[in-house]
Length: 358
Image (cartoon, rainbow, N blue to C red):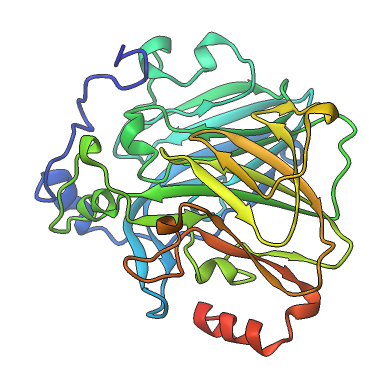
C-alpha cells in the first residue's frame, strides 16, 4: 500500500533524521535564490505548452521583525514555469476546458527525482505522475512530458508525487485552473492556497542543526500563498483581497497541506459554488461565513462586497494557526480590503508592519 500511494522505498531521497547528512551539508553550501510570489501562467497563450522545473530556494514568509518575524523557510524546492522566477506555491497554470496541455518536467539540472501529478483532470495511465504505478520517474538529468487534457473544469491541485510526504512539504505544489467554456469572470478573482509547515524539515535541508520525522510532524508556520501575516497584507508581495463596494468577488481556496483549515471572512456572507472541480447545484447552496477546506480540497466561493468600506479579516479559525511562533496575530491571516479604505491611517499602519512603502 505504501508503494501504490507514491511512497516508494527511499533510495536517493532517503528519510533524513539529522541535518548532518551529506546531502543537507551540501545544500548548506549552495547559493540559492529567494522565491517570488506565484504568477498565473495562461497556458492557452503558450500554444498549450509549459515547462516546469524545480530548484532549491529560500522562502521569506515575512522578512521583518514585526509581529513575531522574521519568519522564513531557509530551504524549499520551488517549481518555476519556463523562464519565470521560482515560487512557493508553484505557478498557477490556467487553461480552458477542451484544451490539451503538454507539461514538460525539466529535471536536467536537478539533484533528486521528481514527478508531477494533477488532481481533477482525467488522463492516460502513464500521465498520472505516480512513479510506482506508472513506472515513470524523472531522474536528475532527465525530462519528461505529460499530456494533460483540460476535461474537468474547475480549480485543481498539482504536486510532486515522488516521496510525496516530503516533496510537498518542501514546496512542490500548485494550482491548475481549468476555466469552463463560456466562463464569466467576476469583478475580482483571487487564488488562495493555504498550507501549514514544520520548519524543522526546511531548516534541516538547509544544513541547520535540526531533526525531523514525518511521523512526528508539528507545524509551526501557517501560510496563505506562501506568506504569513502581516506580509499577507502587502498589496504586491502578499495576498489581500482588494475590492470596491459592489464588486462580485470569487475566491478559489486550495489546501496544499496535511491539515484541515476552516477559513472565515469577517462581515461578509458567501456561497460555495464549486468543490474539487464540481459545480455545487444552486439548490444546495446557502450563505455561510466559514468553509472548512480539507487537505487537497478546492473550494470556490462567491460573494458581493456589500459591507461598509473598511478592512476585514480572512483567516483560519483554528486560532493557533493565526500566529507567528508565540505572537498573535500572524500566520494564516489576510484581509478583505476596500479600495476606499486604503488611504486611511489604519491601513498605513498595517503596511508599515508589512514593509510596504508608499
